[in-house]
Structure formats: C-alpha cells, structure tokens
Amino acid sequence: MTTNRLADLPTLNKEIADCRQIQQWATATRSQWIDELEAIRDAATDEEQAEAIAAAEAEAVRLATKVARRLVDANDIRNYICGDLTGDLTGDLTDEQDDGIRHLTIADLVEWMRANAISIDQATNGARDGWVINATEAIAFASCRSWRGPEADGRWVEIDLLTGEAVSK
View 1 (spheres, rainbow, N blue to C red):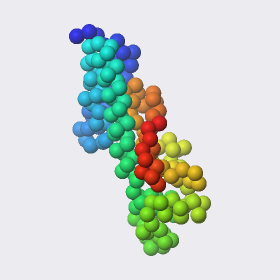
View 2 (view 1 turned 45 degrees about the horizontal axis):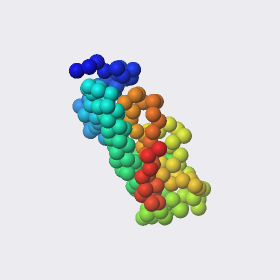
View 3 (view 1 turned 45 degrees about the vertical axis):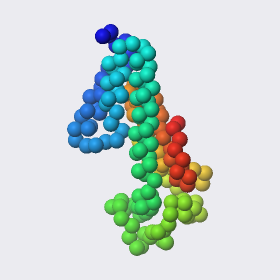
View 4 (view 1 turned 90 degrees about the horizontal axis):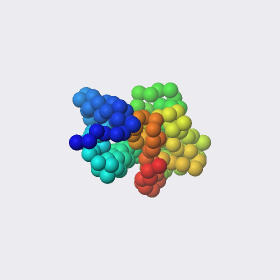
C-alpha cells in the first residue's frame, strides 16, 4: 500500500475518530459515514481516492437530507414559533398559545406566519440545522459534514416546506 498523500489527512483522521466517538454514545445521523471516510484514508491510488471522496461527499449530502427531512414537521414548527413568541421553550403548545394554529398544515402554517409577519431565521444564527420561514422562503435546512473539517465545505441541504423538494447547496 502506498502512503496517503492527503494534506488533509490529520483532519480526516480526526473526523473518523470524532464520528466513532459520537456513534458510541448516540446514533447521530451526520456521523454515520465512517466507512466512506476510511475509504478516502485507505485509498491506494489517486483514482481510488477520487472515487472515495466523491462517494463520501454524496453520503454527506444523503445524511444531511435525512436530517433536514425530519424537520419538515408542522408540530415542531408550531412549538418553535410559540416558544419563541412567549419565551416558554418547554415544547408543547398550550391553548393560550394556540391562536388557531394547532391543526394547520405546513402550507397553512407558513401562510399564517406570513400574514402575521412572523418569521424564523435560524440560518443567520449559525445553526447546523433548522428553519428559515419568511416572506420569500419556507425551508428546513441541515448542514453537511466535511471530511476536510467543519468549516471546509460549508455545504448544506434545503427542503422546501411547501413542495418537499430537496436541494443540495
């Protein structure tokens, strides 16, 4: 086997170790790509390495899409809105907080938010995943892990809350 010439090898090894540690105490979705990371590290040729990198990047997008799809949940959005508006972040919507939104679909909830000038923008706060719902957008998003380190790629997946379409950016 040839010696791996990746300049990012220490970062790659740290990501592998971090993912293993995370998987020991929880089933965290974004860290379920250890096999793909090891394939990058263990590649014997430049061609194998390029294929492994492409596979790892595709897996990172797949896993982030899985995380973002879990956020497409009207109950979670309602509870976030009410908690944010009232300061009560316990999670369950009370009758006083309901304001007629308890049974709204996601599309109706977005319409209600827009009509009442209520928005959520967790992206500007640096959240790894969350929602952006305002006058022009209604998305759930999740960041992709990178084998080059957390700040290297800055890729994420968006799910349009109204159409369900997923886009990798």
